Amino acid sequence: MSKVKAAVFASGTGSNFETIMKCDDLACEVVLLICDKPGARVIEKASRCNVQTFVLNPKSFDSKEAYEQEILRMLQAAEIEWIFLAGYMRIVGKTLLEAYEGKIVNIHPSLLPAFPGKDAIGQAYRAGAAVTGVTVHFIDEGVDTGPIIAQEQIDVLPDDTEETLKARIQKVEHVLYPAVINQLLSTTD
Ligand code: GAR
Image (cartoon, rainbow, N blue to C red; front, side, top):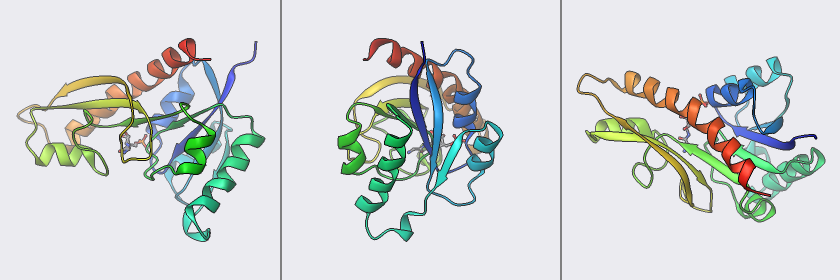
């Protein structure tokens, strides 16, 4: 039986994209990468994995709706059923939320609702948090809001630098995200 098709949206380095792609028993097939940052490192990773990639600059569209309508056309042409945000640093608008209700998932490097938005790891570090973590959640129209699916807590160690903390957080992300994707796909139509 063929697997359901998924797209990953990413803006940056693509380490989460890469671990999703390397997961041997992933319950879906990632056939599309949508990237909103020309030159982002995730693009070369997708090319190495032979994943069809569209790089769109939102500034070259008249509106967010026009930008997302173009993405929607690409998703529909590729018969995408699920969208996984992996470092996509943009708020998803109504056009995609309505078309993919309950089918757009995000990973965020904090224990939401703490430290939403950009630089969550730096925010937690600078705030002197004793614990932080990783959250996987469905998205809504807010910034890193929406129903939480899974969370994992990570202690901030006394000798942590922001870099060591980031490395531990990303290590957890790379295990948690594929596992949650598989769990979701096994329990959702
Ligand atoms: C990840 O840590 C992800 O949780 C975070 O961006 C990073 C992307 O890394 N996402 C957010 O902050 C979303 N608000 P990657 O490009 O190496 O996967």
